[in-house]
Structure formats: structure tokens, C-alpha cells
Image 1 (cartoon, rainbow, N blue to C red):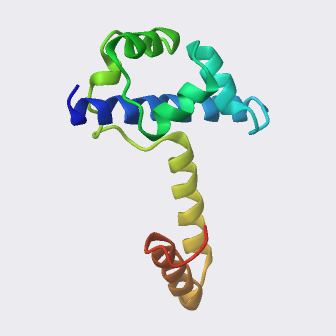
Image 2 (cartoon, helix red, strand yellow):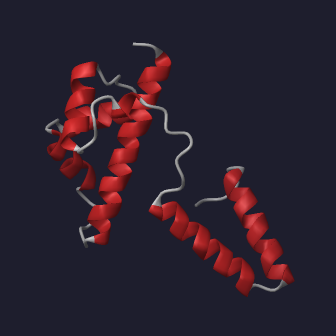
Length: 126
């Protein structure tokens, strides 16, 4: 398996987990145990899910299993998704950031921009 396919599969699997987590949290599920629940839904061990998140390549058989359990068509994990829009969580953050920016005065806006730049640069704890 080439590196780009492995990367696409991992990225798409992480996006599936993100969507799963957002749905579960919106339904009132506690954050603890979300990864274990996702692994169970995929019929894999939590340990295997942990390995997939970090470095384990997703082979063809496992890719089709993940797609099937997540209701995606065959080959979905293999496709590039760079053009997709922001997730619901990212949209909510953007709306919050815009509201904060609009509510702030000049010095507040500069401070908000400076703090966000520091976070992006790795100079502040998020």
C-alpha cells in the first residue's frame, strides 16, 4: 500500500470517528468511552483503533469493514476529501470566534488575534 493511500484511509477514518463523537456528544453521551464505543461499532479492539490512529495501515479488508459499519460505500475510505467543508464543530467555533471579534473593541480584537496567532504558532496552551 502506498503512503498516500494509507494517509487517506487514516484521515478518513479519523473523520468518521469525529462525526461519531460529535453525534454521541450531541446526544448527551459522556466524552469518556467514545473511542471504545467507536471501536466496538467497527468490530475491532480499542487497541487496534489506537494503532490505526497513530500509524497502523488500514488494509483493504479492514477498510471495507469500517466503511460497511459506518454506512459508507465501498472505496469511501480511499477517496481524497480535501475539498470538503468544515465539520459542525469547526463551524460552531468559527461562529463563536466571529461573535467574540464583533463584540470586542479595538484593543480586544487585537488581543484576540494575538492569542489565536500564539496558539497556531504553538506559543500558548489551548
